Image 1 (cartoon, rainbow, N blue to C red):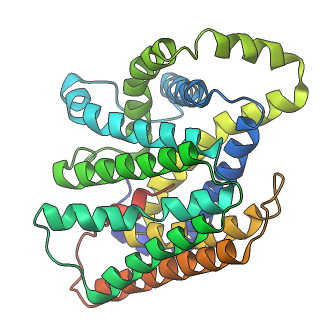
Image 2: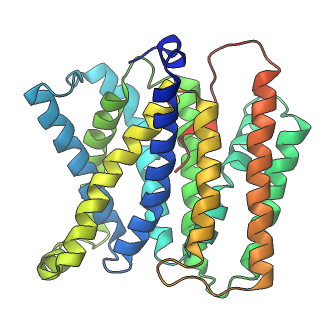
Image 3: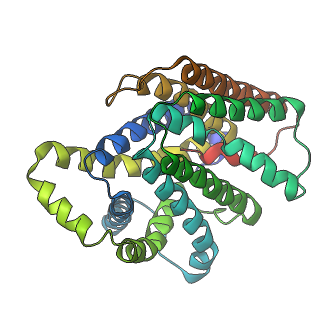
Length: 323
């Protein structure tokens, strides 16, 4: 894992890492939405993405292209609960995309800082600054206003997205409190996460009834070149997104990753109105999304000011791993 001083000495690499994460994160939302419009088995899709990640890293390690260490039981025990929360977050996020349009999905996912803030207060972390508190409340207000004007309102989809926010918050809090991922490279974190999730995901797609119908549908659609292309891109982009997210945090900082996530959300929200069928526009919905986005930008600025007012130290910003 590259240390921070080396990263700071290479501004070009820092810029590439930030742009790569922002691009991959924005693209992944639309790719997942596109494939779920044709293939509704979100849990099976996540299983395939994790399987592709594990196999690619294992192949890279066997051929010498990656220097990831092998599996050891102490690390497995340390990362297992983290992996479960992470995959629960992604699973519910994917499921929500089946019923929620992209602008509203992004708006709801921006509630993560509010959830983290509340979790921090109850865990005795301390009172946040007035700007941080005001910005996350503005984000929440924007979601409520936008939902009131959402013609395609889907209660189940909204519930799935909110559940995803809960699991993402639990994942972030657990990572910060346990330091479970300390000492591991981004590739090693990805491999452990994928490896540990596969048995759980396989069990879930069986007991929920997705399997074997999901496999039968996959074979039925295998004669469609466009579907296979989107599926292949989805599997590859799942790997790229995780890698660029961890890389951006390592090469830059957690704060940079947070701000990049907010900025890509602005672009995704705008594109979401016209891409993949678009969204039926309502003044209330647009107003709420604008308020939500403004809150996200304000939150990033508040966190930046908070960081600048403190002496240099290792940043532990929970929202850095937001998708």
